[in-house]
Length: 417
Ligand SMILES: *Cc1c(COP(=O)(O)O)cnc(C)c1O
Image 1: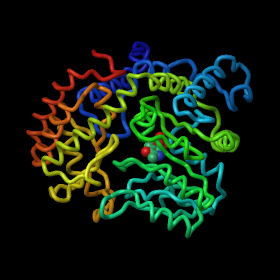
Image 2 (image 1 turned 45 degrees about the horizontal axis):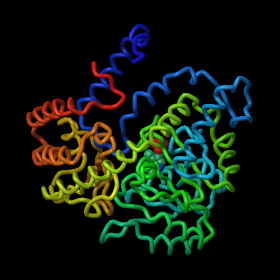
Image 3 (image 1 turned 180 degrees about the vertical axis):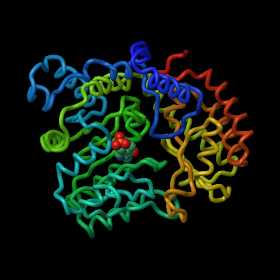
Image 4 (image 1 turned 30 degrees about the vertical axis):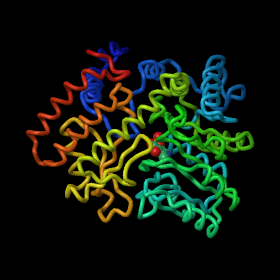
């Protein structure tokens, strides 16, 4: 793309970018939070908009010269509101974690009680987990999934909420393969007088494309990243009811951040335009269809899936019965051209740095146009590798097969060189 100046000024860095391009092109990328942003989105991030300071909001800035930047931010904001049917949108959060922090800052004081899903059960660090600032500065109550079926235990959520009366309840996950019942959460929050925040970082693209129910009608606030299933640049966004607009805006700026990243805002606007197309609706549906096909093929090969399958973009495999630790499997798969991450499973007896599972997702491979037949192939490749995780020769052989296979599925945003 615009690599000519980079190659001249910094050949060392340029080489690294090309090497990363090759990795992303030749491997089957299964990390559920990753994707391939389109060439248009990537182009927007590499623009002169990065040169501009614009603390404040459109029409109310602390710097002059905002004739164009205001239009960019309004465009992104309006597209976000239209796509998700939201009353208000803030497109300035630097990423998903700062978006969540802004929500705490908008509604809570240090020491207040908050509630979220426990990290080992699929929740995010920023939902009050103990090592996070959100666990350190607030009194955090954590709910879990049920042992029997690995579904969120809504009865426990309600009990805990009635007992602890949290100011804020977070719903949303990084490792939960099932539909989240946002209406149920809203009901519980209402009963105890809590603010209900839905964090759709992972599933924003599914929500936008109609492949997962939307929390927007139910939640006071909805936070998201823009770079996962939504397929935009790395960034964050907050949607909210009109009544919370002021509190959220003040929390993001000047509460938490300085100047917005205008090049990112521009790329978010592009991604939101792409996400409003019929093609994106098809994309969202195909992500779920692919995840279901991959899950079925894995189950057929004797794999034990958390919750018994998937209803979204994500699969968690419990490898206990296969006698392979998650980390060993993830490393072997990477060597064989399939990139995923090791992950705890609910009630994991092993340690977080050496857990029992791996986590897979279909957003990136679906962006490359892979469909159900490719999922069956993928399950076979995975099974070959996980069955013999020490076989380096086999890994090299499969990696070559996969690199060849990937040539038929060009990755968006990656030039063919
Ligand atoms: C990824 C994620 C975040 C954090 O996003 P970053 O951009 O990595 O800060 C927050 N919440 C959930 C549920 C996520 O999956």
